[in-house]
Length: 212
Image 1 (tube, rainbow, N blue to C red):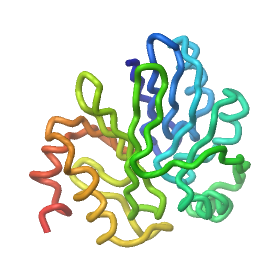
Image 2 (cartoon, rainbow, N blue to C red):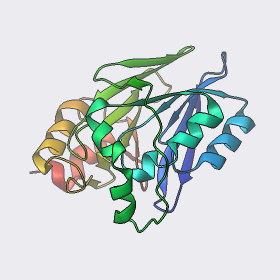
Image 3 (cartoon, rainbow, N blue to C red):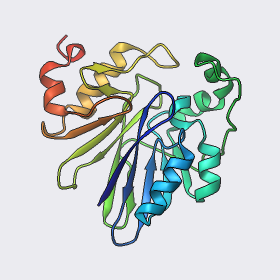
């Protein structure tokens, strides 16, 4: 498996490219705020993007999806519960002071709980974790050399995502983490949507929101 971590855009979004060494196919995760960087990384790694997947539909994660989809020809995927949020990029742009509203792309396929996205020998599992947004999902790679979770803005190092920007509630996000993420092994590496990496074990033991 090939794993490339990218930090994109003014809000420093943690994006990723997951590739299969045999087929050279790739999944781009949350690459919508750094089209040029993503394309350059794909070319350097000699990978072809097959899927563009998103942990949720906030503008820093999906903003330039339309351009990235056009340049890669990849299948765009998002949880259906976040389609209304994605359709409202104009309002989201005002939240962060953007004067130019990104174009909205057609979403080609839904993401669903317990779905598996396969490229060659690499399998990425989808975990629906509502709370930060209704359609927030996390992606786990449990067959990797070290288990890995890409948690979007659901779980951070020492914190959890906000629920006041098109989300649901703190109770929902904590319940999602407890039932969908804390079931993973303690040594699972967590790559959040922003900020430093952590592990499931560290968050289980010390995250203040999970001690309540």
